[in-house]
Image 1 (tube, rainbow, N blue to C red):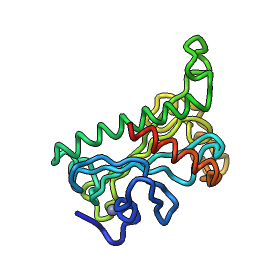
Image 2 (image 1 turned 90 degrees about the vertical axis):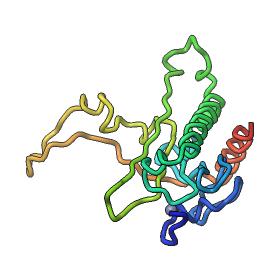
Image 3 (image 1 turned 120 degrees about the horizontal axis):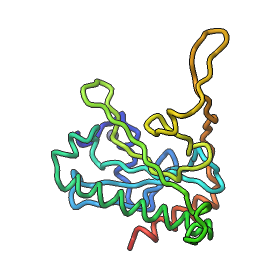
Image 4 (image 1 turned 180 degrees about the vertical axis):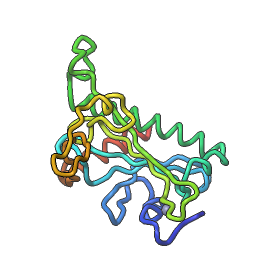
Length: 197
Ligand SMILES: [Zn+2]
């Protein structure tokens, strides 16, 4: 589908680099020759991590595609996804490295083992289809906890609720916080500059 009037992300995908969505996200990169093969990356005004250090980047197609089956049907769209994913990864790395001088020191293995994660899900034969989107973020603080697909998640201690008998594992709560205006402006400007290359 070209655009879905009821979709929040479709409101963001018509923006150009540097422009801000009603939600406060800013477009930092686009790639594509035609609308149907174009992807965008935005930076979110909020983070579930440390608002003084962390950030979240979101990738999404310009069209209201809802799953990777549609991406597979258009080779240029698929190719552009790979390129924008790689470019964003490098920019995220550069920004994390700049924040932390230990990060680029190969002799300091403990400090330099910082991860970047991506997360996305999509539905196929469901009525309620969401605009395809993938998040890329520094995997640390509250948003850097082992996820269900990680082996380390399976190794977490299992507790049991004494009243209901329900089994559960403990996780830190995640609360999305606004990044300060000053830091957000600096971040989006740096991303735009890095991604122009
Ligand atoms: Zn949409």
